Image (cartoon, rainbow, N blue to C red):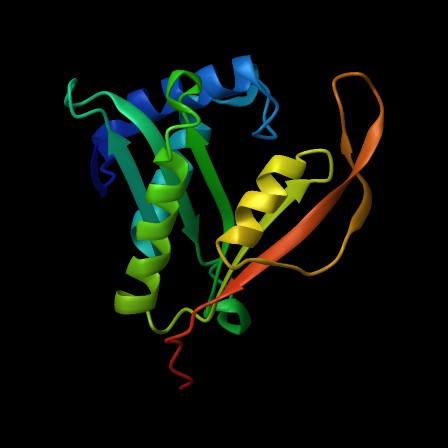
Amino acid sequence: MIIRIAEPEDAKKIKELYQQVARSSNTIIRLENEITDEYVEEFIKRSLEKGLILVAEHEEAPGKIIGEIHAYSPGIHAFRHIFSNLTIAVHPNFQGRKIGRTIFTIFQEEIALNKTDIGKVELIVRESNTKAIQFYQALGFQIEGRFEMRIRTAQNTYEADIPMSWQNPNFEFD
């Protein structure tokens, strides 16, 4: 597996990845038709300007993106020490092979070593995604609360969102 910083030219491949993940599972919140060119281009742009975005390529098929992770600063002065909107996607055919764990660990290491102005990384996960909650906890994320009735499911039921965060051990207060 090759892990690198994403580039704007990766947008089409990242969009395809997200659509495949949305089609095959409920691990990301967006429906397949909500994953538009504009959505992908915007989070790539924001992540490159004010955050971090990594992609994982298949070593036997260079250029085939099988995983992606990103987060970025909200752009508000009071939150400049936070990366939020963290999202990770791993191609359904490659899940269960530690690709998500590897790319996530490298993401955290990059922040700890080279983004010491970032003290906190935030994400939100739906309560029914217990596998993801356990995964994030294993990576050092803590549950910070609960947003009741925040998610409307495709079956027109409601469930809570669980906010979680990771503290950068190398954060340098300014």
